[in-house]
Amino acid sequence: MPLRWQRERFVVLEKVRLTLRRWNMLARGDLVLVAVSGGADSLCLLDVMAQLSPRMDLRLHVLHVDHGLRPESGEDAEFVREVAAYYRLPCRVVKVHVERGRRRGALSPEEAARRARYEAFEQTARELRADRLATGHTADDRAETLLLRLLTGAGPEGLRGIPPVRGIYIRPLIEVFRREVEAYVRHLPFKPRLDVTNLDLRVPRNRIRHELLPLLERRYNPAVREVLSREAETLHHMVELVEERAEELEGRAVSRQGEEVVIDRDALLGAPILLQRQVLARSLRKAGGEADYHLVEELRRRFLEGRENPWLDIGPGLVARRIYDRIILGPRPAPGELQEVEIGGEGTYRLPGWTLRVAVEPWDGGDPRTAVSSPLEALLDADRLRFPLKVRGIRPGDRFHPLGAPGTRKLQDFLVDLKVPLERRKDVAVLESDGEIAWVLGMRIDERFKVTPGTRKVARMRLSRDGVVSLESPGGLWVEE
Image (cartoon, rainbow, N blue to C red; front, side, top):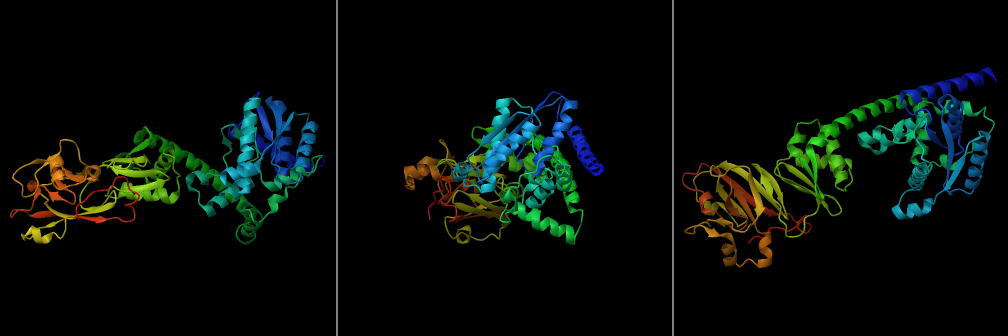
């Protein structure tokens, strides 16, 4: 055996030995499925595992997935069978239907093939009761993945790149570079198969591999692959730490109530922004939504930092809303179910189909009747109010003292007098202060909260239609205009 080959072989074997030990990838006696495509990476992986298995008492089983996307895919499968026979290892070839999966989910060819491949991996691992499944991902793959996700946007989970261990999956070559793999397989008794789809520059990963990385090496840093691979590992450890902290915070702040995911807003407020985003993203996924960065950030800004009690569409049939100190993610409430909205002080608040603006200002002692232009405005004695207020639907037994009336009345009787249709009364909303109704929105304020000659400050309430959401909002307020 040539001295150079011995040195190249030793470097790869030693790296893999250290990787296996460092990440605790294998235990003595494990049954390991080795995924072999027939390319250089997988042939290197298989030979390395075959060299190391006797001293670790491993049982190896070769697995090849035939995607059927290329005319020569059958030849690839036969080649892998021959290679497995060379090592005297059992071999299973699984044929998958990528096009059928692609039609079902409208996926790209690459993503459809990846999903089909991993479904075959997991099904075979279950059938054979494998302890581990080894794939041939290298340090170059790790660098390429990091670059790809930086360019397309990924968030913390994406930036961790290809993990060395994930469930049953292990990547023994994750610290071996492709140039080392190519040097290794050059001396094997069989020539690797070439997958021409890996040369297709329409595929983003291939453009990074064949265009961007070589450019970065020539123009910026000859060791850019090593740098990116090292950074990917650093990010992996950082994300693990963040995930651990986020899981602890989620345990304190998030609960499930039926179909709804309920978040304790106060528990999140003091946490670092990164942890807030992580918990909100996890909660969105729990509720059945997509944890898109822009959606997570809008949720964080409006529901954690904002003073209003907003509504936000988070997916088909799903909404986020805030009630007091709770953020609720879940199915859109049925029409007519008017949710409570807390009014914490001055600010702008989203109600179903409407926007309520609240301002507290000094009162000049003028005639309040001339200061209000429509039923959509109300002036209330600010010192009489007890914040936080709340806007809610009407309840059986509600009573208030209509402005100008001799005493209190049942709210139901008041609505009958105003000829509010029975089917619309469920959409009537009231502003409540410390258990008392201060304003039936869009209709009448309560006598006890009116502006008087002794009033020093007023709370000016202005309702305006929100035409964008009024057709979508559950219920919707009923007001006299």
